[in-house]
Image (cartoon, rainbow, N blue to C red; front, side, top):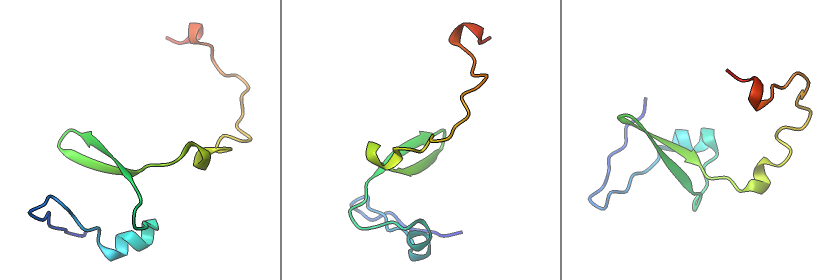
Length: 69
């Protein structure tokens, strides 16, 4: 577990071990997702970064909207 303190300007530093593990770079942007009392930071990605992510996905037996319960 890592602890960081919010500054008087509401800034926070990401601990070094987390930056290294997640390959966080200076200037990288994050999306803030509020889940109840928790805050989740998700790296913002360009649509180009996710191109091909579903390549090879099995599309057989995919249900149509009308078949959903």
